[in-house]
Amino acid sequence: MYPVITISREFGSGGHSIGEKVAEKLGIPFYDGEIVNRAAQESGYCKELIEEQGEATSSASKWFDISAASTMYFQSPQDEIFLAQRKVILDAAKKGPCVIVGRCSDYILRKAGVPCLNILIHADMVHRKKRVLERYGDMKEMGVEKRIEKKDKQRRTYYRYYTDQHWGKYENYDLALDSGNLGEDTCVHLICELAEQFPTRK
Image (cartoon, rainbow, N blue to C red; front, side, top):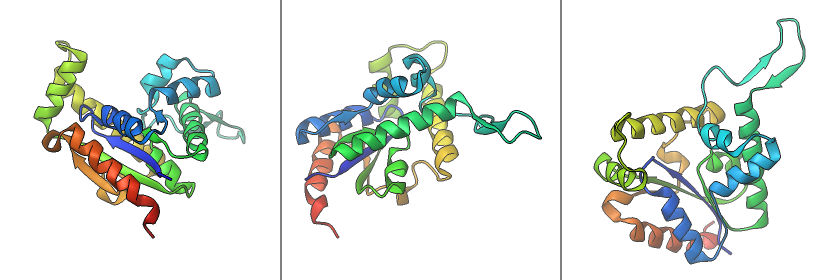
């Protein structure tokens, strides 16, 4: 049986596409946009808000109380969205092998004691800019490089906020792959090979 595979990725590195191909090749479910759909059902928030806030946060959200003397605590929308996505991720992993993209899934499943193969996909700026332009077209308001930097910063902040760990730090992953140099197909091949060997590891 294959492990649950989590894909963390720099924006524009092709992590979604690689994860989707891995899932197809191994014949297991793929969760990325589906997490948004299910989290919307769990939380009651619209999909658009979850897509916007699903991997972005600010230091001003977290838990807050209604007054200094109050003992009642409330969650911000961002926290409710995180918890809804966390539930979807845990439910998906409980059903068996699958590929899950982003949303602190490596940390969430590690804390829950679920054996995972955690992958980081990264690439240099040249390859990432090319991919983003191909996928999203020309971005005159915000240059492509600035958009990439902003998205990475949001993901880094989000991960740090909810895990108290550093996003992209090698200790959190079993394998880091440079999709710019290796290409998508090689990344898919390496992940699948490792997934096939994973159950025999001690």
